[in-house]
Structure formats: structure tokens, C-alpha cells
Length: 310
Image (cartoon, rainbow, N blue to C red; front, side):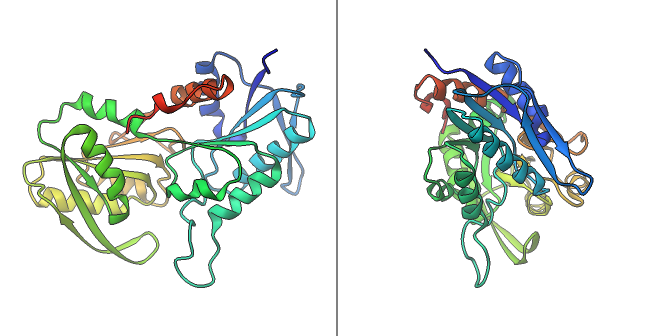
């Protein structure tokens, strides 16, 4: 007899989990979160999960309560005799801490991977990790999905006559090259230098931008400073338009104002992280159908490769 799949969600990702569950064809499971007066909290499954494949949807963007809530839900499911515990993390927090880039710093992504495994997760499903090698931090299967499955059809629907794909920094050149190859377009690369995190000191561009419709590609947008500076620079150099696609819309600090006052025509993001407010320049594409399809494939032991575009 096939095992039952039950989909639950943490507090911060209910908006997305509801859409994933609907696309999968069922309702969200019943889970409660009890809070103590000092701020401590305890999740509780209000229905049996014994022998079931438990899916927990939770992006781990700040605050760190979101990560700890996910860990507690995984532990509770393990202690309730769930057959499998699948952590669906549309946004994997702490992924930017994937290596020691200077002495005496933590490798946060590895620590999170260890915590998820120790809690009892048997599979991780996530999207557009900041660095592909994070998959190697886990000793359980990791299904790493790509935002290109969502973004490429949208880019094609724009019918931009002189499209060029741009990487906002050298680290994003591989991703930009994959988009450019699929769309048979030119590629442009920005080179930036930072003195500290979230602050861009200098930036230059390698490639022809005059007369082109530029599409900047990145995995996330935080303060928006890099993309805004790149867009303004490209418009000054004669670009027809500059758009950006970013999977994870962190948008911290004055990011909304930065984007709205920049030369960007449009910022296209997904709903792995909820927007703090609406903006005329920001368009949101949902990842719910993609995650639901992958969950179905995982449950039925089918290949998920058809969900990869590039």
C-alpha cells in the first residue's frame, strides 16, 4: 500500500505552502504552534503522521526563528514515527556562508545542513542555492531546483528584440551563460569590488550593451545596490532597457526605494520569500506548481529531470 503524503508548513511560509498543497491536490495538515511567555515556542502536529511521508514547507529567511521552527517540526515528526521527513526549503538561509573567505569565520551553510540531518530530515528540496556545492554538505538526498524553469518562459514571452543576458558579478557568469545559451543571446558580465558585505565600491561592465535589452540574472537580491548600480551604468552606456530576474527577494533595508529609483524597468522574482510590500517595478512568479510536481515525482519514484530547463 502506498504511503500517505501529508504536507505541513511553518509559520512564515504558509502563504506558499497553501499554494503548493493546492497544486499537489490536497489540504495542508493541521499543526499548531504554542508560544510561552518568554518567547519560546513548540510546534505540535494535531493529527497522526505515523508511517506517512511528512512534507514540511519552510523557507529559512531571517529571523532565525524560522530555521529553528523547521528543526523542531522535523524532530516532532521523527518522534511521531513518520516514515520520511522531507524539508521543502524554497529559500535556504545562511547559504552565503558556504566557505571560509577569511580567517575565524563560520561556514553557516554546513552548520545548517548538519542541524537538518541531526533533527531527522531524510530529504531536502530547495531552489537556487547560492553555491551548488552546498548539496555536498548533506548526507541525505538534495533535490536542487532552478528558477530558470519559471523565468525562461517569462523572458520568452517578453519578445525583447535585442536581448542580452548579464551577470551582475563574476560569480554569476555560469548562471548567466546557461540562460544565454538556452536563449541564443549575447552575454555581458559586470565586475564589482566590495570593501564589505552589501557595499559595492566600484563596478565596470565587460561586453556590448548599447542598443540592447539587458536581462540581469542572479540567485537573490538583498539590498538591491548591485543590481541598481549595474542597471544605471548600463542605461548610461546606451542600453534600451534593463530588467533583472532574481529567485529570492530578500529586499532588506532600503531595497524597495533603491529599486524604484534605479534604471531598472522591471524586477522579476519568485515567491520563495514573501514581499514586504507591493511595488510597481516588482513582478512575482510563483514556484508552487514546480514544487508540487517535484513532490509528486519524489513520492512516486519518478525522475525530476523533466523539470529542469537549463
